[in-house]
Image 1 (tube, rainbow, N blue to C red):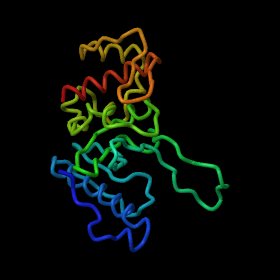
Image 2 (tube, rainbow, N blue to C red):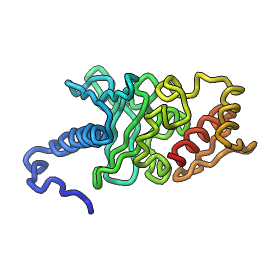
Image 3 (cartoon, rainbow, N blue to C red):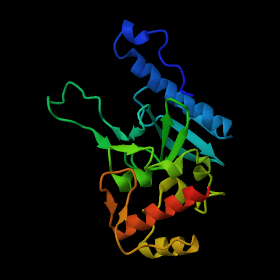
Image 4 (cartoon, rainbow, N blue to C red):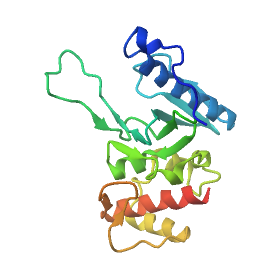
Length: 214
């Protein structure tokens, strides 16, 4: 059942108020859900800090960006707010990168469901919006943050897999029983998005395989 929204009518008093309030609520949902899962969390103290939260698992700290949505897809960009120095018609909007965070957590604002999304996946797909269908394997997969459960090392879990060379990546995939196709991989829930780069294919399939099993 969907949660009640703006039944007090704060948006009618001041436009944009509920959007900000709802965004803050999504961040608080993440903190609550992560805490209930047993993780220690540290919340930002100022709206414009580089990321929304820090999550601690066995003294390994993850930078987390929280993205809420009510319409079956998450916008995984930043830079939508522009300053006065930016000329009309220009944009700083870009897809989140490793410089921004280690994991993106998508919050279904209607239900509180959480999608635990490795930054590698955001980077490889490269779309500004990722649908729930595209991310179905990451729904409620909190154990992706637990290197004691996900078959990866502490550094690989936090920093991603792009630091590995193709030989080591292929060996890891083989250990996990993953067969790497020679053809490009189609990403479900997208319009003709295919992954053809050899390294990106292996990384994508490793995360997808781990997420399915957890």
